[in-house]
Image 1 (cartoon, rainbow, N blue to C red):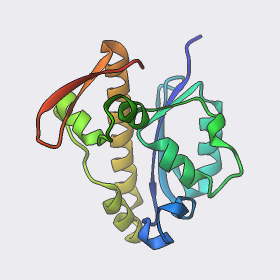
Image 2: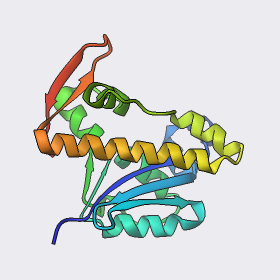
Image 3: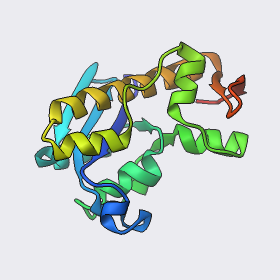
Length: 178
């Protein structure tokens, strides 16, 4: 039986400025969360009313893969649960790449350099959509982010490296062990 890898991302209702700073991520509120489960073979979109279902899916995963999900997405979910997310087996590709390179990368720089594609929006746009009641747009954006996260992880796992662009626009390669 193969491992159930769950790729995960969420968007918030409020920004850091709205909640009094980055020390209050748990107050940002989830607008939409998206997972892709290798066991299920598909995506799942969760609205705030289904946040407990999302948390249960993450708890049951053999591995949760994301990009900045340990420091951000899990902290958002802590606003809904007393669960200790450090108990979830997790690969945060941002953390791993930061340890390897000594600086943070954007998911977009990896996607552009490795696949020639880029994100469709950014988190602040998703917050604006939430204020406008445009949950379908948030879901589409978040689904795309999960797809890119999955592609980056699968590429790194298959080839033991990923490409990224640095701040000067140079395409570079870094080894990974995913």
